[in-house]
Length: 85
Image 1 (tube, rainbow, N blue to C red):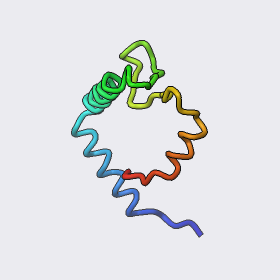
Image 2 (tube, rainbow, N blue to C red):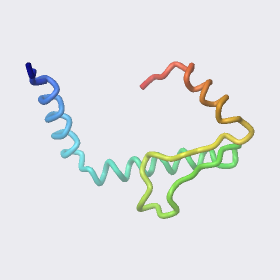
Image 3 (cartoon, rainbow, N blue to C red):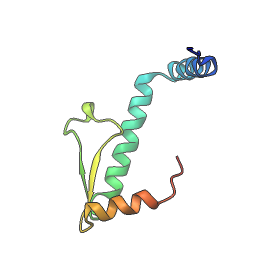
Image 4 (tube, one colour):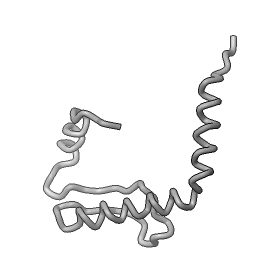
């Protein structure tokens, strides 16, 4: 038996309507500005960022390495840190 997720469909429609009202280009630009602020604030503080060289190709997703911290230790720490999102 197949059940429809009516509440989910209505919520998705409302979210898309809200995002359309904001404008996807404005959202992308805001995301890029936030990413740039994070990278600028943390650069030179023992953090290496990996992202596209071209700003037009950048999004809010990036890779980073905490210098002098083994990746397996960082993974363990992040697994046990309470997440707010």
